[in-house]
Image (spheres, rainbow, N blue to C red):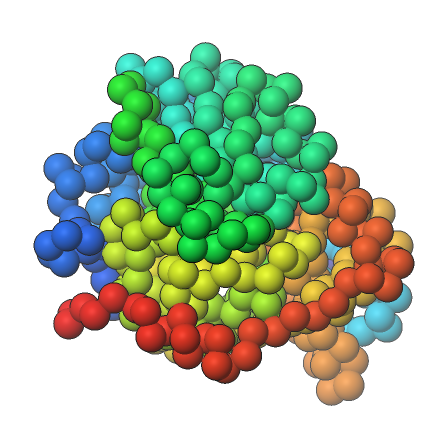
Length: 458
């Protein structure tokens, strides 16, 4: 029978959009290790988390038994402004590479925030509003999360306070201004506004900051300001839950045309977009219903999965957040000022870390200049300027497609294109001018950071 012609863009109808988020942890054989109270080193309870997170989000964070969580109607209505997102067949890229591989990408840049982050931002803002809070605080690296949260808060009438990693604050001024356009206040981190920020600046004068630093400041601000809670754009289980709409839509679109994936690839910083993309597919793999490779791609300058330790560590540099068992470079690790700011977190989602440790997922790290070469090659044939973060996935998708060219295998490759790079032109400029470098931390630097990991006998 002749192969069904696959359109360039596979769209779902509104009626086919997911009505519930998928909680992968419910189907995992080995559950992620629990968060630990940094003072007692005992598993965190809902009561422990109540002063930091919204009540409903705490329930979602601690729930590893409920497979599906209903999406509130107001969030479903908001999603319809930019969802369902297209699954695109990269015919032009396939032709350029002369590969027998079939390449697809799930494009999440169809909203003003320019990325997938809005999927969780609206959910977290919604629950804050339902709880009667005045506002929320957060951190942001490249700025996509801060932009998305500022949009969601503006829509719901909430105040939004963003601590933006200083190097990104300076590299991406337009992203900062979009946040301010939506009413958010934006502070470069580390700052003198908080006690933890002042301590970090004293210990690391002139630092460009890190997501760990910004998290510490945002948590301190939330816990010391009445009517506020802290929200996070990646890493946590609740965020991966919300981002499962990406994978659920991808699976529905593929089933519509009888497409079966062989390889699914995503960039990995904290893990939310990768986790969201692979969640329903991984659930099927765990149940023995799908034979598929999953590849996490991270920068060589911040290689938590490929060179990190699987251990309990603080989620933030200031060591005020819970401890999470994850692949980590150490909460005090200060990554180089690379141009993929959203991938500069020292650790990986506990869920993805467990999957990786169980051998259910692979991981590779790639150098910065090679990532931008792949981004440019993709842009020239597919007509989308990709975000530097997403370009890590593009790089490995191209590598896998070229392997198929060598072997003649007709594999189906799917990757997540999490956002656009139109606010990242300073990074592209550095690449075009030959001023971009490939920093890789030394073993000695990593060992010095590992030596400071908390001693936890669990």
